[in-house]
Amino acid sequence: MAAAHRGLGMIAGITLLGLGVTACSSAGPVTSTETLEIAAVTRTADCPKPPAPGGPPGGSVPIAKTVKPTSTRSSTVIVPDGPQIRCGKEQVTMRQDIVYASPVVGGVRHDLRLDLQIPRTKGPKPLVVYITGGGFQMADKTNNLNQRTYVAEQGYAVASIEYRTTRTGSTYRDGVADVKSAIRYLRAHADELGIDTGRVAVWGQSAGGYLAAMTGATNGREQFEQGDNLDRSSDVQAVVDQFGTHDLARTADDFDAETRALYMAPNSSINAYVFGPNSNRTVLTDRAANRAANPATYLSRSSAPFVLLHGDSDRIISPSQSLILLDALKAKRVPGTRYVIKGADHGDLAFLGDPEAGKKWTTQKVMGTITRFLDRELRNRR
Image 1 (tube, rainbow, N blue to C red):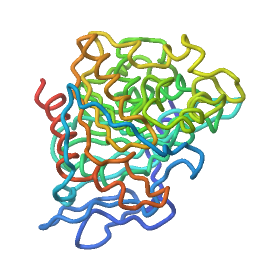
Image 2 (image 1 turned 90 degrees about the vertical axis):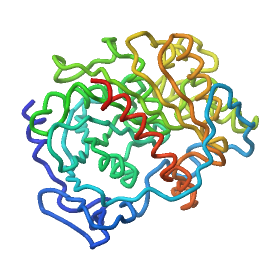
Image 3 (image 1 turned 180 degrees about the horizontal axis):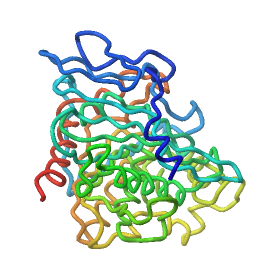
Image 4 (image 1 turned 180 degrees about the vertical axis):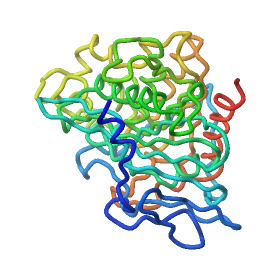
C-alpha cells in the first residue's frame, strides 16, 4: 500500500511519449509541473493525439489478405461519416503514472501505472477504465488520447492502464487480474480522486477489448482477484468492447487460410497469452484451455451489460467474433448490443503506416454510440 500511495503522487512531468504535451485547446499548449489541464475554450478544437500511436511491431501480428463479409444479424450498421470528435467542451485534469499495482513476475517487480483524466466539474464522476490494445504483446497507456479526452469531457473520469503481456511471460489470467486490480485501486482512492465507486465501466480496444469482456463477464468471480485492495469490489456496471477477440480458437475464422495458420501456430501471440512462452499447445487443439479463456464461459446474471463495436473490414480480428459473443450474451440473458462499422478496419493502424485508418472510429457518430451507452448504464441507472 505504501507504494500505491507514493504512486498516487507521481506525475511524469509534462511529457507524453517523450514529447511536450499538447493540451486539447485551440488556444495553444497548456502544461503544468503537477497536472496536465486540457482547457475549455470558446470554440472546439481537434482532440489531442500522441504523434505515434503504439501497437505491435509490424509483422508481429498477422494481417489478413481477405476478409469474409460479416453477418449483421441482430446488429446495427453504422456508416461512419460526418464530423470528427472535437474537444474543448470542459476542463480536464490529467494525473500521470499513478502506480496501481506491483506484481512480481519471475522474481522481478513490475510497477503497473495508469493515467487518469478527470473533468473539472463538481461532484464524483463515473469511472471508465480504458484498456489499450497491443496484440497481447504490449500495453501502452498513452494510446488513443484523443478518444479518451473526448469521453472524459462528457463527464467521466477516464483511467488508461498498463497490464501484463507476453513480454513478461504473462498470460490472460494476469491481464484480467491487472484490470481488476486497477478497478479496486481506483475504488480504494475514490475520495481522493473524485470517483463515484458505484458507477464503473471498462472500455477496451483489440486485446483490451478482450480483457474488458473478460472483466465484465467475471463480475463476482474470485479466481481472477489478485493483489492489493481485496476488500474492494472489481465488479463493473458496463463493458465497451471494440474489435476484441473472444473465442480465441476462432479469432481468424473470417480470414484466408495463410492468416488462420499464423494465428493458430504454437506460440503465436494468442497461444502465448493463453499457455505462456515456448509452449507447443494451441487453443485450436486444447478445447478446455480455449473455453477457460473465453469470456462467454463466465457469463451470468451478474455480468455487466455490453456494447460491441466491430469494423466489417477488420483484418486483424475476425468481425464475426463480436457476433459470436453477442449470441452468447443473448443465450445467458445478459444485455448486449452489436454495432458493425461500415468499411472500418482494426482501429487506428497508424503503426502499420495508415494514419487515416482510425478516422472511421473517431467520428461523432461512432463515439456518440459509446458515450450514449455509458450515459445509459452509468448515469441514468441510479
